[in-house]
Image 1 (tube, rainbow, N blue to C red):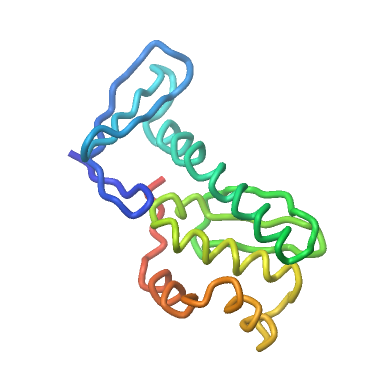
Image 2 (spheres, rainbow, N blue to C red):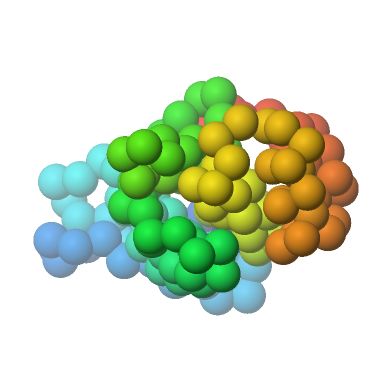
Length: 156
């Protein structure tokens, strides 16, 4: 049985084929039951499930922190990326979040959101940037260290 991570918890993945055209997933105890349409790959169904769970969290947090920072709320994209957890294009008003964030616990997701939103104010990693991150996420050194210890080996 395959094990996967979802928001810092480990689940046994159970795949069930379905005639429904839309993939659905839900957790029961320590299992994630993923209903996969017959014409869709299991990997695509899992990616859709992760996306559907991560999108509302990063959207809410991004809106919250952009408002706190007094900057326009950026557009958000979620992608499968191998080298970073998040990336900010401040001039374009865009933040890209790695879909792999759906594997880690919420505090780590929130740190990534704070980090990227702070780039909307300070475009580099200057001391002013890190002071701003600290203001909204005082535990950021611990979270940053933890994220660096997690290998970005996409499950998807």
